[in-house]
Structures are given as structure tokens and as C-alpha cells.
Image 1 (cartoon, rainbow, N blue to C red):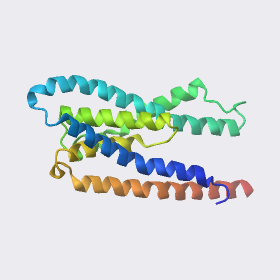
Image 2 (image 1 turned 180 degrees about the vertical axis):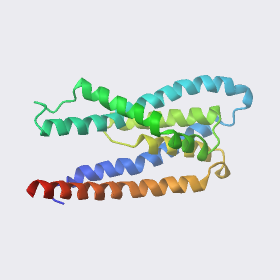
Image 3 (image 1 turned 30 degrees about the vertical axis):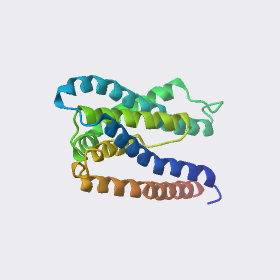
Image 4 (image 1 turned 180 degrees about the horizontal axis):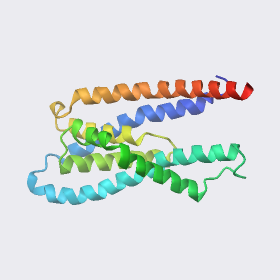
Length: 205
């Protein structure tokens, strides 16, 4: 326990806990501000959604990808492969490639859940969700706070759906996602501790 920076850990946990709530609230507020656009406005919203989706697609590179690149660079620095704690260009490219390949190869189930399982998305709802998620992630990046892009995007979609009525949101899907989020952190912490103990015991032996 003494090896853990309690203040830094608490700051990270706060940002991870608050960012989904902020994203849901932003998605709800943006959708409410849009009102109930009719199908005649859908072509315009499709064009706006392309811009909002581009913003939302860019934003994880400012946050999620930085965490990946930072961990790799820290490991290289501690192993003596880097003279200074900086992120080389090849590490940035590797992190971007890993995120792209991971999404294209294994992310389709998540994409289906977020795109179809939470609420029925139409161009206005998609625009509100993408815009809200992109703004929240970029805001967290500017404040130096690590967040989960998946949590933020899912919450923005949920908030936008709730703005159209509770019945428009699949509560079972939202509950399963919340449970997965709650279990992920302690599970990863436990596995990390077990792997460290195993590697440490192997080196001592």
C-alpha cells in the first residue's frame, strides 16, 4: 500500500466516476436543446453528425492513446532504453496502430451495443451523442484527467436517449454496462497484483 500514490489514485478514480455522469448530463442537455427535429431536418443533421463524429473520433487520441503511449514509454525508461522520460514518435505510432487494430478487429460487439443496444439512434440523437462525448473527452484532456472513452460515449448516448423519454433507453443494457464498469477496476487491480507477485517470486527464485 505504501507504494501507491493515494492522492493520484483518488484523482483518477474521481475522473473515471464523474466523466460518465457528465457525459450523460451533456448528452441529455444537448438533446433537449435540439427539441424534437422532424425527419425533414435529418439530412442536415447527418451532415452535422459527420463533423461531430470526427470530433468524437479524434478525442480518444488525446486521452486513451496517451495512457497507452505513456505506459510503454515509462517501461522503456525504467528498463534503460530511453535516456529521458519522453514519448518517442514510434511509440505514438504504435499506440495509434494498436487502438485502430483493436477497434477494427475486436470492437464490433461494443459498437453494436453502443449503436443499437442502448437506444435507437437517429441523426439528431447521434449528433447530440457524438458532440457531447467529444467535448467531455477533450475537456478531460485539457484538465489532465484520464477517462475511458467507451464509458463517456456510452453515457452520452444514454443521456441523449433519456432526453427523448425513459422508455427510449434499454435499462438492461445500461445496467449490464454499469456492472461491467464496476467490476473492471478491482479485477484489473487484483490481476496486476497477482502478476507482480508471480514475476517477483520468479526473479527471486
